[in-house]
Image (cartoon, rainbow, N blue to C red; front, top):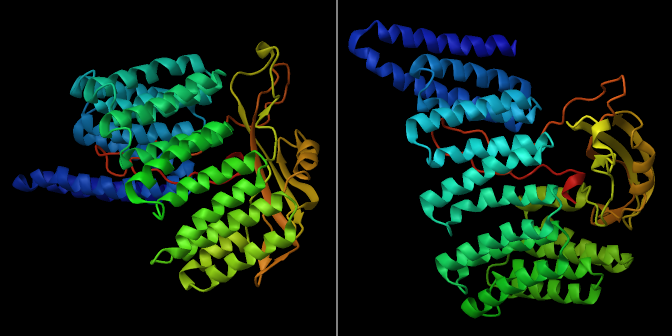
Length: 476
């Protein structure tokens, strides 16, 4: 039925366009009507894509592309947006060859119409690099990223702020190749670009320092994480004073680094400073205060200080209960959280190391295991069982064994931590099939929508703003 609905929509648009062509001067309105129709259909595509209805969004993307070709011709620059959207959803579905074909076609059209150094080349070049990375071909990802960087430099200079997305992908590529220092370099270059633009002590470089701190936190470089946030904190204090509410994020980042080093008292000190600033500010931000109280509670939970942790959680609960607009946040943070506080080292690749890669399929496949947990008020896992896995049995026993060592934020009811049963925890991983295996179980790994590359809301315009990444076990 959905397919018929899409076809009916396009047929109506085609009929309207054909009628315009028969009306003499009214024919000039046909492109405008098609553009409006294209935007409406494209918005439908974006909504389906965000809802992970990939098969339907791929079908609609193909229909939009065909209509655009009818309106503008097969080599028109107006095809760039539809081609990017189609390639993106194909990449997400694991249809890598088709995705690469449409990215390459996009690049050829942009080169013919806008030139070999057009900024419009950057999106498809990023898409190609992401596709190669998902295919496990890091070597092939190098050239499109190198070209994207050259295009950016030729348009906006070596120290341009616009190179950030390319540098982020180069960092990912370096991680795949095991070169952490090179990955760090691509992140630090972005801070230097901000310093060249604004000066080393300007408040406008603080977001770049936060981004660098988050990178170090993700890659578990705790000392460098703290240095980045401390640098941001010094700039804010010099510009706005010790009581500036803008210090809260910098203090929180430093506190989290102390937690990683098991320095509980230092972590509490920095969380406490941030909380003191918020409490003394004329404009009371109850949600921000509650989040810090939860951070402090999480710290006590990790260090087996449950009574003190429960006091912090109760205070946060009371703050969030005082504002009707904060009830959703209360549910997410305290009522139904599934948030591991201690890292769960479940495998993200099976086998972890391929000592003889030639014996395995180079293209990774998607795997997942769904666990049902019982969480105690102190955050410990008292029971775990697998309720779903694909491929069945591949990491089931290992997942159960490892998840028992995790520590979760406890769930609360009426302001009190309680025992929670039936908590669902999903872990996704990639696996490589042995070539001698007869079964082809599993399907090519689908990618989550990337942060920087999203469907284009309006063909020919800029990409939509990135959405927050979906939370699953890989985020921790």
